[in-house]
Image (tube, rainbow over all chains, first blue to last red; front, side, top):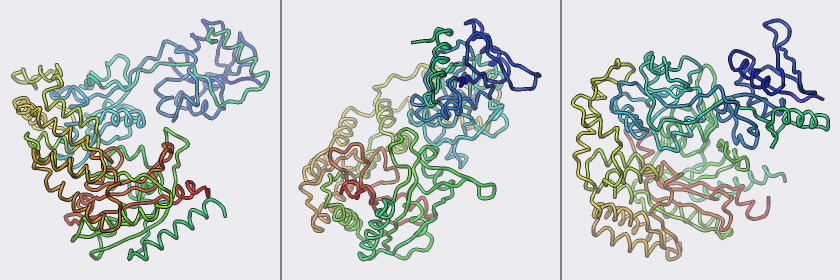
Amino acid sequence: MTIKLGVPSKGRLMEKTFDWFGARGVTLARTGSEREYAGAVEGVEGVELVLLSAGEIPRELAAGRIHFGVTGTDLVREKLGLWEQQVEEIAPLGFGQADLIIAVPKIWADVDTLDDLDAVAAAFRADHGFRLRIATKYHRLVREFLRDNGVADYQLVDSQGATEGTVKNLTAEAVADITSTGDTLRANHLKILADGLILRSQATLWRSRKAAVDGAQKAALEALTRKLEVDR
Amino acid sequence: MPTRGKIRARAAELRAMFEAEGAIAVETNVLQPAEVLLDLYGEDIRGRAYVTSDTLRGEQMLRPDFTVPVVQMHMEHGAEPARYTYSGQVFRRQEDDASKDNEYTQVGYEVFDRETPAAADAEVFALIQSVVAPLGLRAATGDIGVLMAAVQGLETTERRKRALMRHIWRPRRFRALIERFAGRAPVPASRAALLAKEDPMALDAPMIGMRTEAEIRARIEALRADADTPPLSAGQVEMLEALLSVRETLPFALEHLRDIAVDMPAITEAVLRIQDRMEALAARGVDVDALEFETSYGRTQMEYYDGFVFGFYAEGRHDLPPVATGGRYDALTRVLGQGREIPAVGGVIRPGLMLQLEGVL
C-alpha cells in the first residue's frame, strides 16, 4: 500500500507546494487534462498524490484517509478540536503567510483595542436592539479568542467570501478575517485592532496521527521524511 | 440493567420524590429556539450548545438546560406560587475534553415564590442536600447578590458601574476594569492620543457601516468624561477585594461581611438576606456551622444566577463535574417575563454521577 499526500488542488498554494517539494527532490505534478484532479509523484517510492480543496485537508487528515497533508494553520485550528491529538506539525513551508485578525471601520476613531470593541458592543446593542455583528468564516477561533479576552455582546455572522465588504453592505459592523498585506482591508476602509491578532498562519506540512500504517507504508513514510529532511 | 436504564430509574425516583414535595412534573422540548438562548448568553452559548437548523424554523439548539424553558413556561401561564420538577437529557458540546459527557440526565426542582425568598432558598438547598447526603459530598455556597450590591454602591459614575455589572461573570475582565478605574493600569497610548485631538473624527476615512457618526461622537464624549472621572479610591478597591476574598464557614463569613458592610453600607441588605437564609437553612436542619461560604463562588459558570448559589462536589474527584448545582435567578424571570417577574430559585441533580459515585455504574 502507498501512503497518501494531500495537496491543495488549485492556484498559488498548489504551485508553491509543488515548488517546495521539488526543491527537496520530490517532484509533484498534475497529470491528465487541465481539469482532471490526478497527480504523480517522482523521486520517492510508494507515495501517492491526492489533490484536494485546502479546506478539506484537515478533515481528511483527522479521518486518517491521508497520511500527510499541506494546508494552513488557520484551517487546522478552526476545523479540528484538540488538533494536536489528531495531526502533527511536520514543517512550516514558508509561504501562504496570513494573519487572522479583527478589523473595524477606520472611521471608528474611538476604537483601537478589544477593550474598546467590548464597550462599543454594549452600546451598540443598547442603541440598535441587536448584538454587534462580526463577519467571519473562522467561527471557533474567533469565538474562543473573544471569550478569552472578555468581549461580550457581539454575534458572529457567517461570511465565506468578500468578508471585507460586509461592513459597507451593512451586513456586519466588524470583520474577523485572514490578511497578508492588509491591502484589501485598507481598500475597504477597515483597520486592524492593536490587540486583534488571533492567529499567525502559514502553509504547513502535517502528518495524520490517525492514519493506519503497515510495514510497506512505514518504509515509504520514512523515505519521504528523509528526503524532505524533516525527520526528527 | 443497562446503564441508561439505571440512570432513568434513578431519575424517576428523584422526580417522584420532588413531586411528593408538591412539585408539578413538567416536560420541555429537546429542541429550543436558538434566538432566546443566544439573546441570553450571547455567542458563547454556541461553544457550549449544539446548534442545528432547518430552512423553516431556522436555528434550534439541543436543550443545554431546563431552566430557561421552565421559566418561559411559568411566565406564560404559571400559577403562583409554583413548584416544578423535571427530568431528562441535556446536551453540551465538549470540544476541549472528549472524556466529558456531551449528553447527560438532569433532574431539577424549581420554586417560584414571591413571599419568602430565604425560605425558598433553604427549601431547595435542604432538599437537594438530603438527596445527595449518602454520597458525603462537599457543599459550596455563595451569593452573587453581595458582589452586585457592592458594585452598585461604589462611589463612581453610573457608566463605570454598568461596565462592572456587565462583567461580573467574567472575573478577569472585571479585575482589569477595576484596575483601570482605580487608575492603576496605564491609559493606552491610543486612548491618550484620541483624547488629545481637537476633532478625533477628522480622518481620511468614509463613514461606513451601521454605527453612526453620532454614536462614535457620543462614545468619544463619554471617554472624555471618563478621563475626568476621579479614580476609585484605594479604600473602595480594598473593600471590594476584602469582600471577594471572604471564604469561611457561613457564620464566620457572615460576621466578616457585616464588618465590611459598616464601611460599605450598600451591601447591608444583601448581607441581611444571607442572615435570613442562614436562619432558614438552620430551621430546615442544615448544619450551617459547617457550611462553606465563598463570595466569589459561582462567578465563572453560573451566569444567570444573581443571588444564592450552591454546588455539591465529590471530594478528591476534580475530574468530575459537580453532582448538583443551583441558585436564585430572579433576573432571568425578568428577562424572559416580558415585563413580568417573579423571584425564583432552583437546582439540578445528575443521577448518572450519583450512580457512578455509589459504584453502581
